[in-house]
Length: 303
Length: 192
Image (cartoon, rainbow over all chains, first blue to last red; front, side):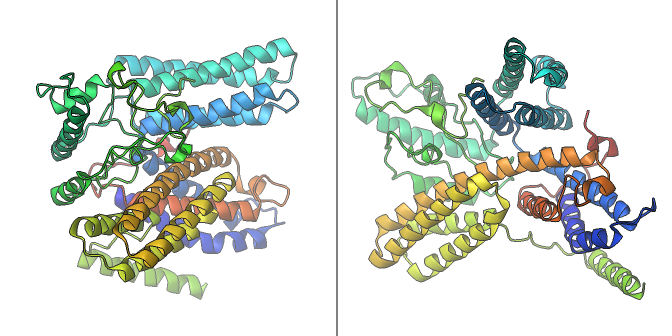
């Protein structure tokens, strides 16, 4: 796969030099077999190859979250601003959803899980409905309301798919380091709560689960490539001295796992805000309220 | 014509060399790989307490230069955010050089982590944007798309090309080098 990406990038780079001049010199000729048509064909093929490959390494869950986020934003803007023309932004939302559907079928998401397969079919139907509805966007108010409802449904289906996608399961060594880190976290918690709410019996991973924190949730953009144990160990041991500090009203893009003091730096580039929505009643007075819904790459967007 | 002939011969010779030597070439340097290396170094520094300010600040400067070179590729609405974040990192770096304090290194590390997060969300948005554009273009013919009154001006095309290449370079670092598994199917290219 790496070779494919590299070859596509290389051919795109070499095409880049020749394409525009060729197009300019060809301009005005009417013959059917112009060289720039051939080049354009080649360019399309190469760029599609690259796109397909990138689709294969992108994290589906994060992709879905991003689709939901951008679509919801567009729809909200359109609904609040009645004067704006609706066709173009809606068509864009539709196209993004189509790309997402394409992504799902490329990665054969839902081929083995029945529920996901059903949702994928739903998404396909919604795409068709929205496409048909798009023709009537600029009609009366009543109809346009219904069309918005269609699009909301579309976004909702994408959100459902995002929720259904299983979390990325880290491999064994990564699990170990997470357990170590979590163990550290829970012992610290015990200091805070000496009343025995959190006793030793609670295993590290279960401990986090009881909080509703999925330590294995990913919003990494790309699936990680394997890295050595050494670097993992080093990174995690470096983390031990960190304090757990939560700072309310951070700018949304700063509200990440790293800022919560629970950094998981394990070599992959894209790590995520940890889902703390399930932080239980035990911690109510302890932690400041943080509005996770405002975070950019959010896990709690419901559409 | 001779020019193209020469090019073809040259490429074929290079290909022959590459196949015979079977060299494992390195990934092209990308923003993300240099981010990773800077963060690794910072972790090392924080662990071992061996503070080499000169190397560290050189690495951070290099990183900032790379991020800024990536800047024209991102969507216009994200450009401002990236610039602000770069300014933040720069100020942290200057503070670190001045005080030579361990706390400042920690501060710098945090700001770089934030920068990384921002960059990754920007990349995702660029990716979605590029995919949508490719989707549009795939149905058109060159003759329609690239005329002056067509949907694609040369500047737009250049930008799209830049974005594609940058995405490809970044993706290179994350793809596995598994050759056998992958088979390319032309039908995958077409939507629906």
